Image (cartoon, rainbow, N blue to C red; front, side, top):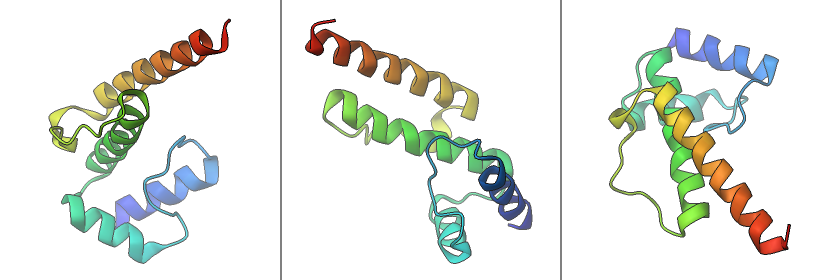
Length: 100
């Protein structure tokens, strides 16, 4: 857990995370979030965080939550790629509806 806390503190300091799954200032929330998902490593933290982003972005794009997915289904890199694709789709859709 110490490694995850240090990793999250670095993310907060560098503002590298676009969507933050837990509040950086709330250590107890981080512990509970990690316990909830069974996250034990920095790699798993990144994977679960990217999945949470995917879950929320998918809901925005398609109007339903992808409840059939689990954070362990893909690597953090794969989740990040899918997030980028969904965001591009959402942006394209917004441009289409605005007449551009």
